[in-house]
Length: 157
Image 1 (cartoon, one colour):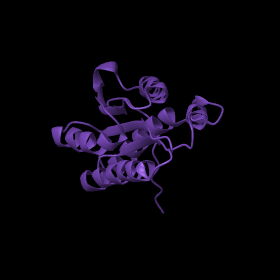
Image 2 (cartoon, one colour; image 1 turned 135 degrees about the vertical axis):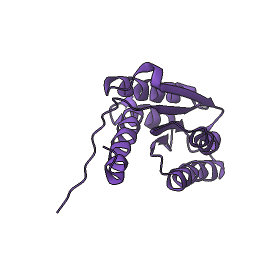
Image 3 (tube, helix red, strand yellow; image 1 turned 90 degrees about the vertical axis):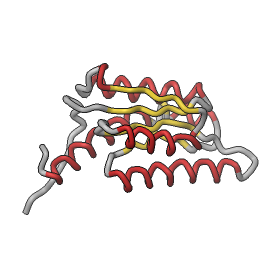
Image 4 (cartoon, one colour; image 1 turned 45 degrees about the horizontal axis):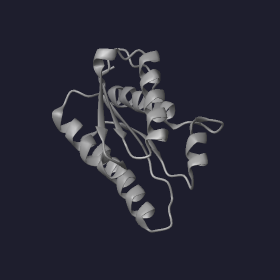
């Protein structure tokens, strides 16, 4: 029996981090956590590109653009859609997450999902480096781990 595992090792990897600018108080924390994690895990500063988009709605098209540009081993997407009083929350959050999943599945480039969908700002901050954890860190680690897993499945590492 063979077991294939990955680790969040970024040495030699090129990563695109796509950050929503909407709910910037939260997304800047997510971005900072993701960038720090990538650097701590061995991705060189020169091998990280940061793409800023208006909101979570635009994350999938930016991810598709990054994969089309080529050269990335992984993508990290960070954003925050806070529940409001209308259906807008449901539509935007679902479209962002489903769109990112589609890009990942269509291209084989792993996307670390750091898109928060909290009920309020307090919940968002708790998940952006607060008492509940750090979704930016987790997304960066997941992207690197999946890049290694996929490489091993292809026999490349």
